[in-house]
Length: 335
Image (cartoon, rainbow, N blue to C red; front, side, top):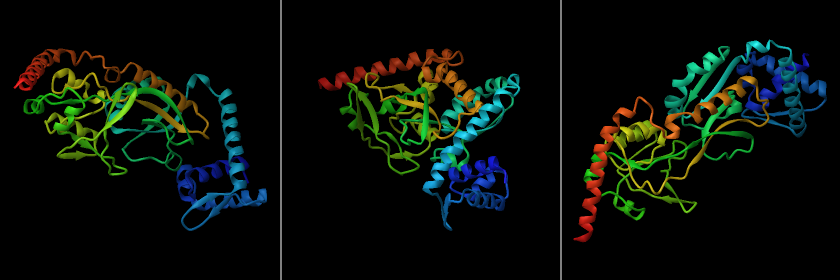
């Protein structure tokens, strides 16, 4: 029995909790995976895995052996990299999972740059709102928004996610302009509900360093970021989208920021990977590159891009509309 291959097979079975999935990821017959684990257990004289018809779980001895295997496999990979052709750079297939809006608007447009730097890295990019089991699905790295809850993951902060409260001029023409959180009670919003829980996500504002949740009434709810933004642009209600999605429309005047003195709480954007996985060169260079990309991205920094700046004239006209609405509110308050 090839002990090194047996360790690879065993760690993949533990990671995926499945003999079938491990076989698919390793491109091996399932019977080979089964016989490899059986031979490994016989050679060690202990049971490493508990198997039932529905699940695979690791035994206490298996957990201890797994930790050793992870370190050994990482050391072997490091040793091999010392004597490889350093000039060739990182190589191999890299599976990445990203939120659809970040992938479509930020990552995909810049991929030519990554490919020119690392032509031997084959990127497989998954984009979806559902939670991903990174170990089970063979994902090497994921980009996520929010604070990390899973202690089995390592997160490297690569940017900041900032939302903006805004509305279409057509909506503001029909409603008074809100000046405070209390004013929001008189308004309608396009609500966003979680695909995972089905629950509507409350609005959020940072006030005196504290996060304040606000429930908004609305006549429409969606669970897709693009649909959410589209509904706001059509004037269905106030919206609180990511600034990187709203920025072009804020600059063109198709959306107008409201309550600028009350910004939503910022959230970290992180690149995450499994704590027990060695950070391979292909993962390291991707994380370094995406950190650099996010640091200079106009959509995340709020700096107008050259392609958008000409539309600032239209925005100035809509600022006049905003001033008129404010004047109207002041008049109504005196009546």
